[in-house]
Length: 92
View 1: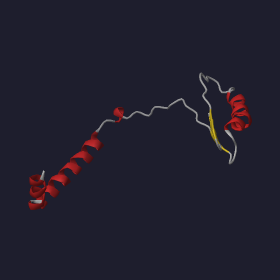
View 2 (view 1 turned 180 degrees about the vertical axis):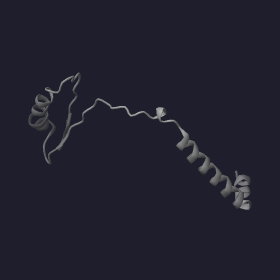
View 3 (view 1 turned 120 degrees about the vertical axis):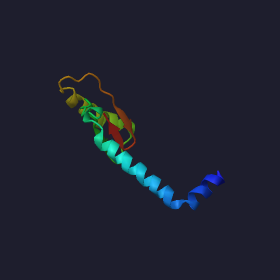
View 4 (view 1 turned 90 degrees about the vertical axis):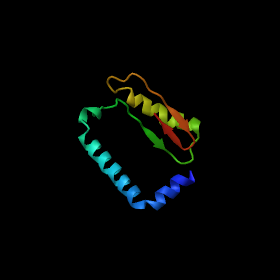
């Protein structure tokens, strides 16, 4: 391990040139990658987070989650809904 470190210090210009070459080659490869490899995919997920200071999980479920679930039930194509309540926070 020490020999690798000593080699890098003794030939610092060569090491920096190699690093520069790797960075330039990586940037060119990234720019030449076809866009089909990174398609825009719309994830059909809605995340609702509600914050209310000092509310217990039980009150969060009763006062925040249940009314919001009733409202969100009207969304067309809704297949699944999950809710969690924590102290001072609720999410659907």
